[in-house]
Image (cartoon, rainbow, N blue to C red; front, top):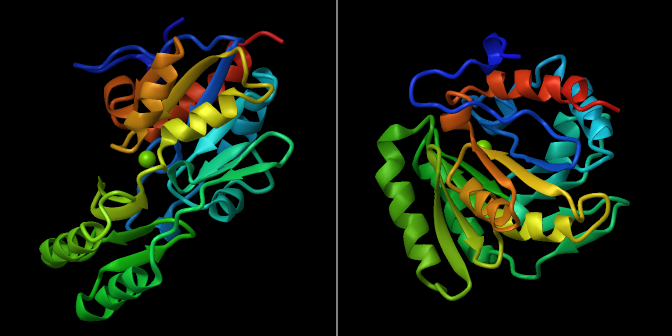
Length: 249
Ligand SMILES: [Mg+2]
């Protein structure tokens, strides 16, 4: 059955019909949630938490959130859910049952201080230090984009063996090279109830391409929000809502 939410626009492909043997990996911002002016300003639609819970139950618990946010942030947004999740692009993975798999490398303190100072010298820039990586947003400071990019690039170049600079939507991020969303998928796919299932990764950003690769290498499916859902998180949510209905118990 094709309904309005599933009808593809020009240049897009149809989202696949959900299957009972999937392991579903979902990015948050720009995938399940519409992008807001700042990360703190996102709105969690009324039905999302219930729909995630129902989809997770339909997949016997094989549903995880894979985000650039930290775990606390993910849990706060999706409260009272406490899903298997990867925070900070895979730096910390919370496995089913609660055990954590975390990398050791962290962005040096003086780099964090340098990027925090940009908030004072470049009004509108928002610096978000996390446990392992750091993001500088310039969504509200377009005039300072070049400065933010230059400073972040110079810092990352001090230790290119361990750190890399990433382009995000209206932001740059420095993160340890060992951290990717592929790491998150690989960690979770070794654990029950993910193990042995077909990984399906839904994401919208450059960092999601690592997750896409991890899913397809295992015979799974990569769903790019731009291509499959016309770039609209609302369409991803409509598709998510259908999972519990389509996947017969
Ligand atoms: Mg995203």
